Length: 327
Image 1: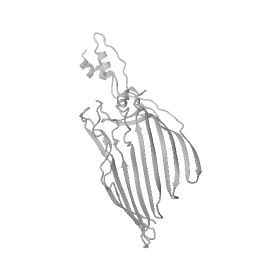
Image 2: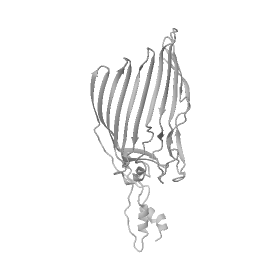
Image 3: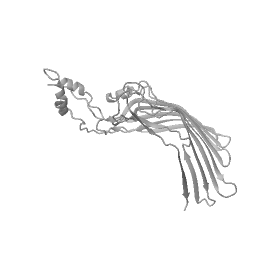
Image 4: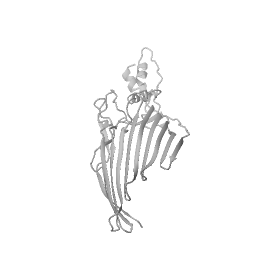
């Protein structure tokens, strides 16, 4: 019996795709948070906390998510002469496990110079059975990675500089990554993808990020009108935009990284003396920094090393006028 005949006849009848699949997923978890604090005076608080979180698992509903995994072995067995060898079919499991998160945080909250609040926090977040959503170019597929981790520090300062001027400054350093052994215990169907994740950073997780903001909100001289002027600058460090950093040939995927950037936003507003109407002129991304949020495979365009890519561009420069009224 010829292999070609099996591929177009017997094999396709014995092993139809997509197959009918039915199952039930059920899971439960207790989530909790515990904190302790010490306050030596009214302007200073030390604290530590531990929290446990949970995100339910489920099923991939794409018709290709439960595909046959060993078709080559089955066809080879059927083509064996003089007696065909029957190889049991092995199908991918379309289910994915629930994700669990354990986080430790220690920090301090302080009041400086009477009106400035300062918060400093160190955190370590460990995620097990971390859920990853990948667009392969033909389907969306959620699979589990054994573990992921994010460790870092966050600083925030905010408060009034005068009666009508306030400021805000925040900065974060976070090392969010997949451990080098993140493939331990992973389902066979997801192993090839997970192997290319181990040792890399998480998607859209820059190591450095920050915001600086200044606001004036008060009277416009003695006219009775209210004036609002706000400006802020957002910074994001270099970050990955693809789900997986390596192609199937284990070479880096082109256009994966989005370089570091700043984005500037501003708003100016006037409020009538009776506070009934407010007019605001605003603009976002005033420096028109063009950035990518997600990069993925173009459907059915090219293979490893020559694959076409698509990028989802974030909002460009935008501006507008907002009018508010109280009735």
